[in-house]
Length: 146
Image 1: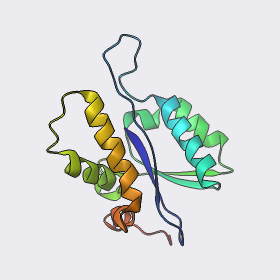
Image 2: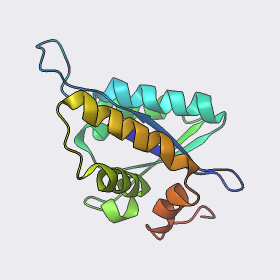
Image 3: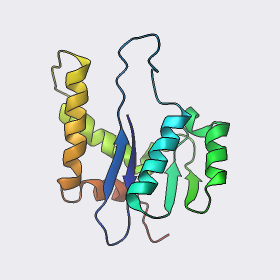
Image 4: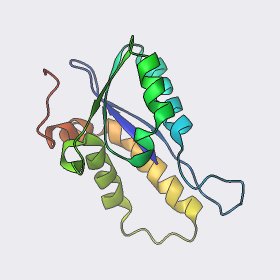
């Protein structure tokens, strides 16, 4: 899973995410590569219709040269701030993942597909819970006013 918690003063908070199931095939990627993260950012830009301030954690894939080059090439609409190392408490998306895990923690799934469906269902429901996404930002102690 990869996701972005999107905040804009005066507007409803949003989630933009991607989920990939690894099915054990030799040609299937096991995780997200830099292109997947780039595409998620591009999709967010298209959906949000404006500039993006990206607060980025230190996942190794987030630090690769092609992604940094993408950031540099798109400074007209993309500003990137790197979180300090080991600072999940400053990342609102960690709160989102915690909410998802809490709700599916007791799921007795028979296969990966059931887990994926449960995660997608939870992610689709979160924006309709008043304050859930906003609460994840508030939990970090960060604010939008800068």
